[in-house]
Image 1 (tube, rainbow, N blue to C red):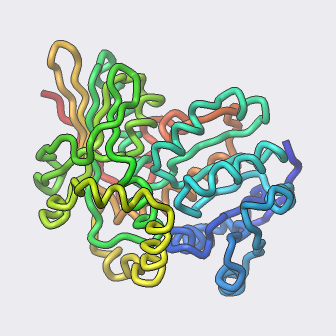
Image 2: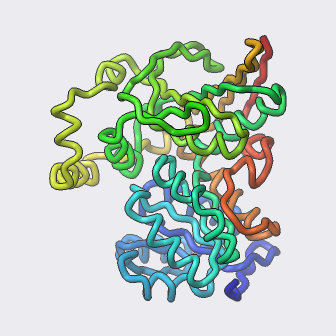
Length: 364
């Protein structure tokens, strides 16, 4: 494990840590939340002007480096105990960053919800343990909330054999979220059956989800819990849903010619360029009034059910809360090396420690 320089903040000394992708929408929110709590990271990313401007504004150290240069990655991570990766789409950043973490012994966290990324990490426990590093993907709102709900329900119904989870649909998404969604659409849907992740068509199933503030229509999608909840609970049959407005539901199953276009790198590049320029993410006022919604249900072979709802701050603010708290715990707690989900790292009740989270559990 690498040695780290200590950072003293608000009377507490923390090891040095890095926020990569600090210039993005979610990265900036996390940087501001970390600053508010006195948990100052090294701000890093690929776009020097934006990273350095944010560093000057917050009075934080900065480091600019591309992920396609292993030497640069290792050099910048060498004196860092933890890196939090917020640079999506994560299918394009995780492998390179993790290679640097393995080389120098830096713990790795990210806010990904992309199933291929989550499976890549959880399928290589021996590699992370041999390197002596803790690896926790999915420390953003959507995975943290439903992962913890699934773990709570497994405690309520230990013989649960089936799990369904659902996430609400934000009124407005960030550029990073939009680009991650663009990556997943051509991959179609995913469900877990008898312990194995299987490919299914987009919008494979529909359901009416009883969220805390009322029912909403939803469709199955490639949501991260198809991967993570299995490692948190051991439940072998998992479906994940996303609730959408009616106008979005009609587009949830794109025709084959659209899928073929989206599988072309050149076409995806054009769309991503448009997203970078046109998608801004929700503003301060919208985040202040919007609530995030999550739901989960487990069922055993006898038909017994236990369900739970979670309502929290908007998904981006909740992501900042969750990610910073996960970093703080990895910096201060002695987790054994290897891959974790948020719930397996910090317990099913972790989400209850975050501000303005309300969880309700009901048996039937």
